Length: 169
Image 1 (cartoon, rainbow, N blue to C red):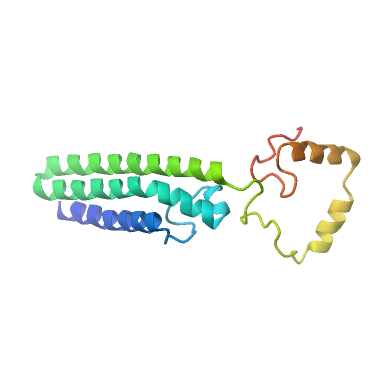
Image 2: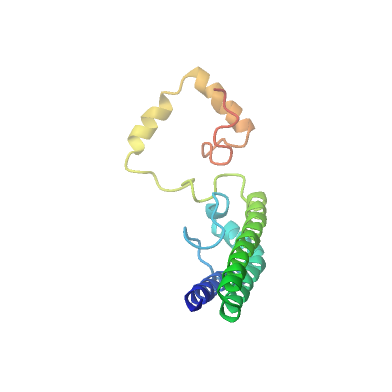
């Protein structure tokens, strides 16, 4: 049971550290820790907002893991495993709830364009001449499709936000 408790305590430290970093705004945008959805990764501001909102539930999840670790140490083998399992499930549900709320807030606060995750406004790529040739070869029909996309709020960056949902198939 000492191994189970140790694993829960280490997980609690990791989750608690992410919670504190998210609450204080010190969690850098990354692909490993925090609330990571396309909307939250679109900009530094949305990532910080989502993780600041999810921070309290992440801290609660860390506390649940600590409680599970204490239960695993103090109860017998059967009771300790039971408390540890319940604590892990409760921590996952709690963290998932906070992540969902944070992701929704980030989606609501996301800029109208694609943010800086799609490369909008970035320097041209080495294949810019190919892209330029492709753009100049747009037919009248695809221009109508582009106009329909503009009505959907996807006019400058492609289909980052709606993934092509407004375009005819």
